[in-house]
Image (tube, rainbow, N blue to C red; front, side):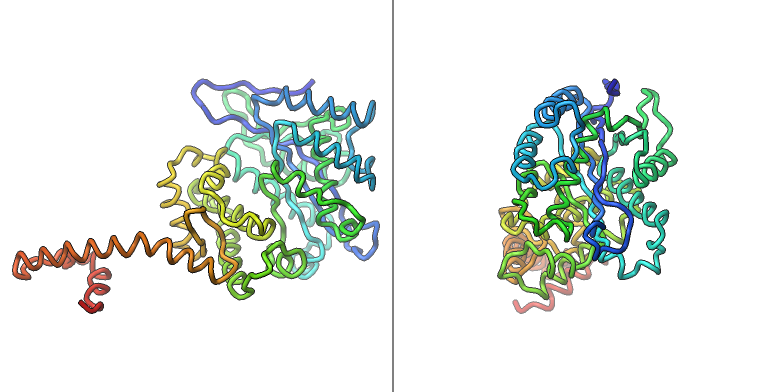
Length: 401
């Protein structure tokens, strides 16, 4: 029997269920084609109100392609045409996908210093990333995993999350639940998506003639978080940046955003959590979708739809999210088309030109007002003489009349 949750008349934020499964396993002999080069964990995200529809339609897909068996990526293997058909059907489900992709090759660069050569530490490292990302993005979240613990990682993940789940609230809405994956098609979808993403990331599978599966599922992808965050792994190896990007500008802008995320990833402040989520989405688009360009404000705000900042206005979003990110050194270009992390000089000028059209007329009006008041009072009143306006006064006084 599938679990459901009760709604609350006093809480309009809907609970989200995250059905999780993974691709890959522990092991560092990644030159061996039987050892995965990446470890991918996918959470299929479903609204409480759409649980029944999701389960019913996923079961239809399972019966259609797997008859009496489980819906597993490994059963499809290299039958790319069959996988593509299944994915097209999965795209009709009321759900979205959030994945964490661990690049084991990049982890090996500092593996010993972090103890990642040990299975228990490696799994704990991944568990922390997945759990932290999900808990930041979703205020009301229930993670559903396989109760059998049929492999080392899922057993580790179940133990990790169960130990950290909050006390159930008055509606008995716990933050973690078990289900049996072999009998729960909702979890099997996560297995299929994780296995599919391997054809986009795993070095042993990327060149096996698979079509661009990522482009098929992209409309359902909330985010793919890649660890560790290194410019080299994004730009030099698997870059989706436009051909005319400026390496120095792209490097600087990527680094500033990544530093902000790293420095603030553990914050419990709801506003900073929202800033981290937006910065992560900007990074995700920056590195994985060169043709998308600028991102509309509505799309960025939509990333916060399940957080405490879900209902902020557009002006508040610009001031408290984008503005605060810029205050903290994150370089974000803006235009009438939206926002993006710049990758070339022209995008930096987009930012300057856009803001200059706003700032310069405002400064001109302020200067005109100050000059008129000084003239009318024979210089007895300077509106900028107050201490809090010293920077602004110094700017105007340094300009030629």
